Length: 563
Image (tube, rainbow, N blue to C red):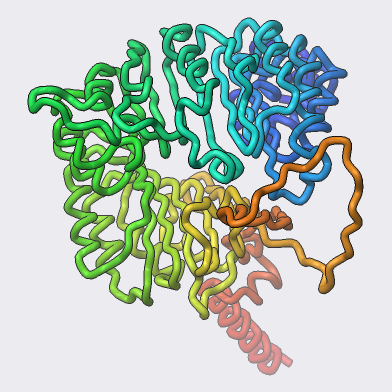
């Protein structure tokens, strides 16, 4: 189909064509080919907007404010920037970003999900009021607490009829409020009143931390009942940790909460929220639809026998490798016959030469389609060795390897070609090299704490065989050998300072250099004839060279005979 015919297609048909494009880059290139296509494809191109830096937030939000015909297509808006990023000084504490969002809110007609993921709450609290009044479809919210917490009169706590809510506690919160109790945080009661009483149809709840509770009390969450709840994530949130076990016939409050929510499909927990020794009291018939679980290995030991239907598993706590660790992991995973996705991390205190760990992991999970392995602290495997160990998984399509490279490890590009040779049926994979000193409490890719990282998408021919790799590699940008002197600049708003003798601040993100290229896995495939085939280092090239020599000798013999 040529360009002219594409522009005269109806809008709904163009949206169907766009839905077949898996890459957002391809969608953007198609939209930029003409004004008509841009106007028709904008609902798909701007349906989900993810902003990752303070500078990107300012530029994009300013553009959307001046282009209401584009802003009205946004359905999900994710705003993320960190004080550890290099451009944080562009907008300290998100003052400008929150003010831009307040002005943009009346133009976001289709917005139903908004996530604020920064180190501090929005400095412009009126932003929440503007979103609540101007976005009638907004039903999913996400925010965070830092060194400053919402006031008791914050507009954030005035929403109702929410379908999803997420709360993340940043480093500043634990630095300034780690010793606060519930009665010292008056806004916390209003928060749970908004979620429990004014949002009875809540479907998703993600609370990754919270204040301590008084001894002998039960968290309000344990008394909540949401009939439609299907996703629950709990971080370091104390529920009924210090409450007594009560009567032998009675259930712990949070166990009763779990048994009352039979629609739960996704459940993520921590030791603080749910102690593993409480799980045996859970009714085996509870959580019949649970398919996604994230927790510790001890949690899984108690859940796996009665919940073999789990298909997606993430073991949150890294496993320290000892002599019996491979057998322990295999013994727990063998009960999960439906497992298709697995995320697991190992800590090596010494070089681990035996391949029993990966072999046992692979033999107990033959149906895996997605596998993510992290090997930290010590160099344990070479990439090609690890790829060969998991190559016997017949359904594996997506792979992510994060490890400490050995001294003789090849470059990312060479390692990627080894992975494709070992597992040609992969669709995509990622390789990340990390330092041996990185703390596993941080996600290396999210915080830019890796040495090198690469994402690769395999392209195949008409027979399904890989012929090239679409590569995106990231490395730390080179720095100056000296440090420029810092000049203090007076600010209208004072910077947030941390008191002495506190926990260390999170590591500063590295500025990354991104390289995108296409790697040909068949460098000699284009040389089919002529001099290229004769010079090719392959069996076909050898045969052509031998044939050329024979023809040349025959020609010389005939020339000498008839000459």
